[in-house]
Image 1 (cartoon, each protein chain N blue to C red):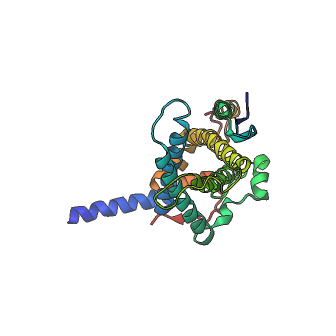
Image 2 (cartoon, one colour):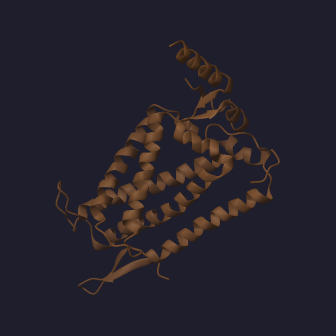
Image 3 (cartoon, each protein chain N blue to C red):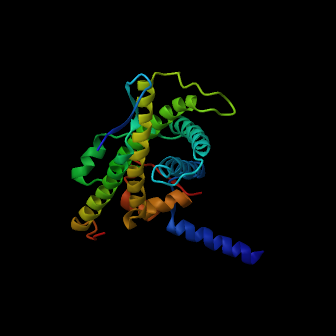
Amino acid sequence: MSSHAATSTTVASSTQAVGQIRRHELVDRIYHWLMAICILTLLATSLLPIVGWKFAWLTIHWITGLVLTAGVIFHIIRALFFQDPMSMVMDARDVANLTAGGRPGKYNLAQKLYHLAIAILILCGIATGLLMLRKIDTPFWERNAYWFGDQTWGAIYAIHDLVAMALVTMIMIHIYFALRPDEWHLTRSMFRGWISRKEYQDHFDPKRWKAKEEP
Amino acid sequence: MELFRYATSVYGNRVLLGASFDLLQWFVAAGVAAILAHAIFKFIVPSSDGSRS
């Protein structure tokens, strides 16, 4: 008992000395990785048959799409009403930092631009995907291929196809940045939730990101 | 290279089916190009602490 208490005290003291800053709450990390699984599953089930790997992909694809849709709705509500949505909005200081070399808030300009691009792509993918559900039979509804005319369906499919292919580019870039040594503190924070106090002081402007200490 | 996929309807009209999947290789190439461009930039231009990565 006393040994356990002593160990706990040491760990607590060590954490205090090093200092950890909360960057991502557990629920946000779960959301991120759930979205990653969904996006990779959606891309695999749509693009692998095109490159020659034939399998029954449609059911997995639309069910995963609905999971993605639910996740994105959850994220929008959480980001708008329970987090700081302005931390992801570009402002003049982000642009000024390009030349002045100042430190960013919680997210830098590149991350904000990436988030904007991926948000547009995924929302377009979801909107067109939900419409495309009308063309398949599911346990919940019967298909109605005549909901739109041929040209409209063609445009919907074209947007969905382009979104899928653009997501390949975006994910390649995302994984590249996650693997770069100078970004490891951010990658670690998406697994464990925190960055060190030193990383916080080195990479971020405390006036723009008023971070919380790790409990 | 076609940008879109088309079919011919029973009425003989050209109908849009979607985007051409021939474009996939170009989207992959764009990702590779962006990664290489950034990696080369970061190697040539040292970071603020003087290191190259």
